Image (tube, rainbow, N blue to C red; front, side):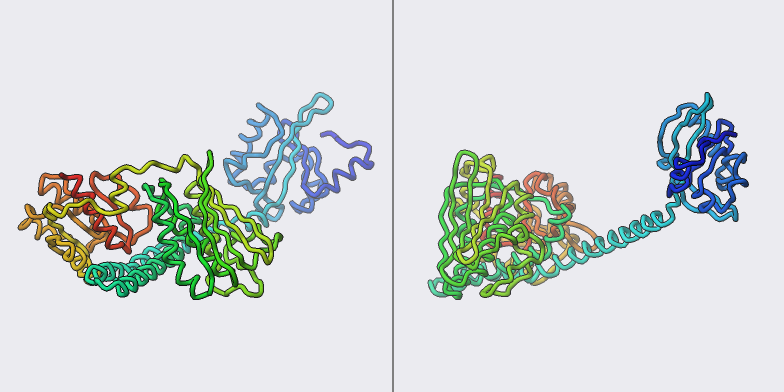
Length: 511
């Protein structure tokens, strides 16, 4: 046994004042020195520990492995934490009670002899905090899964009536010739699309935050998006006595059409909300590196001290004249979508002078339209002399199924309709030769899905039937559909015009 601090002076007092329990152990595993914190922590007097084996402070069940730890440390001595990555450590008090411990080891050499200095700390409180955090995380994970299930259900149930309205509105527009009535239907369609966008915003915000929403890239004409924005926002601008100017553009983008439109629409809606006089202007400029879309207003402006907060959830400018509308999620969604699409959103503002938001789109995201793209997003190819393909519609919602039949019937498509996968297979067994296209909801009854049904129909017909899969599900489970040969995915609610153009494209590719 040695006396490491022989002077009994200030140095030894420092060791005794140390908050951690310090023990010095010789090569044989015997305790040769303890500080005052050891007696407090382990409830032994110093004399009861000196000369005793260190395993006396280890729970009996762990003494064998502790001896092996000591041998391992002696073989490769270095300052390190003892075994914490392999096993949770525990120490034992005089009365037999145990506590979770953190132990740091350091080799010490004095007067030609080797020792180990052990610093022991009771981590009971920390362990409790960790356990509570793990429990909280488990609860949060469970809540998140429950939320995901709710969102999936809400997405489907809320989109179904919107889908019916969209299709009926498209059918109505086909039956009207009066210009005034057509204008009213077009405005009604814009309102339906706004409802769809609001639904998407409420359902997709959580997916944007978690990274669960992935963009579906396609070639998109910027002019068409801007025209949609102009149509949807014009009524709001007029009702508020504001001017709205939206530029035209000739560029085409490789982007997610729905998300890009949502991002731009949120900026325009936000600008109209915070503008009392004057108006909102949307401009487009292009340089060597970026295409920049600017949404500028003559509104109340944002204080410089709050500019960094405008993209935060639930943040709204609290200033006289601001119209109290929305949940403060619009700009949050803009920032998250911009990151998802590889764009950069910036804001400049001056109180009382207005605000300008800009979207910077790398020129690498711009594409040249092909004839097929121009046809799909513009006017369908003239097939007036060609026979319409026979269509098999599979949809278990009666209202949506009837609306699909109405829209397709007005376009002259021969239609067979089924309310289940089994009914569709029965129809195909009798009329398969007359069916050239399949339109199916993804989620069908009895746990079946439209893609699996299509595979069975293709196998029966021994031909590569083209198909459109419809779904209100926004989860990643549908991301693989576009990779299937001659299959297109349309998210509900589907625009009737978009559906017809897609059918023309799919059937045209079969010619």
